[in-house]
Length: 429
Image 1: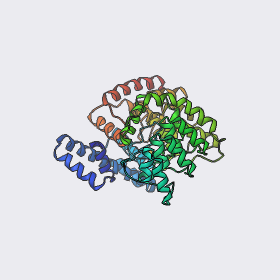
Image 2: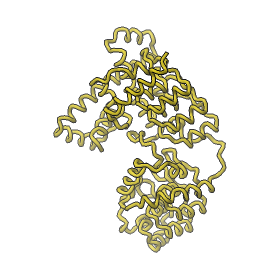
Image 3: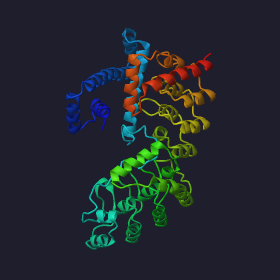
Image 4: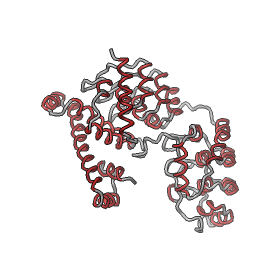
């Protein structure tokens, strides 16, 4: 875990005792890190004050107005502090939605954290499944061990045989009645693993056994989502992480070639669209760029403008924050409100501008978003984006981006802000 992640977990009260000790060890030998945690703690203090003020605004409006009138903070600082609050409210939101903190920026449909650390040389049904030892599996089953027995991370023998591409072992387990619909700790079923890892023959076996390609894991992705994404460097990086976790080399060239074949198999086997509302929230789908879930919500009549409770963000706002262009396009085409405002008064255009999502800024403006909309601090998107990129604002970007797990390249951000300001200026009245 990086030092920045440790600091964030510590300030949010999520750090374990072991993580606190690790942070203390790093702080003792790194003066720069000491300065960083002091800066983060200072921002955290401002952030908590802003949260308390938000509560006052809801419960005692008159008292809150008196507080604002005597505050020595500048308008811009209060707005930027509000964005820090927004970052934490989004973290709270995704934690409540059972989405892993600090990984929310990873929009790739994935299996999440999948690992099997037990040595394959061990004498048990799970290790036997991983190395393809069918006689070992039969012996375990004769000793009345369940074919669906789980080990760490909720993995069954069928999961493990799938992960290690043991085709004949998968056949045996299915013949013994293995349940194809059991999920691991991440909610992944064997079909999702087989599809993502390019095991086409195992996909066929699982589909023939009744596996449902429409079932979703805890991140909201089904087997079709896992093979539909355009191949990219980021996706390859995730596969490399899987290699490390499983301790086996993945043939990425083969996986890439198999994905279209697997998609065809899954599409043919997919059941007719269900009349039930998806079990993944529209906000989580917007954060991760899960367009299939967004389209399902639209089809089922979900209110596209519903706000999450913590920060008051709509799905379009969240898509703007996390740079999910395709999701934003789908929502806008489905008539999502362009100028809805969150608890801080920020619209999707404010947020897309601050988070330097130039393509989404242009999309919103071309679609008719109000470039003169003001937030609770009287700032338009242009005014907010035109604030000088001084040391204080740089620190704000580092804090907000870090809270959301986003990469913070300040030089790139500064250049993007200038370009976005020019675009907004053309639309300003």
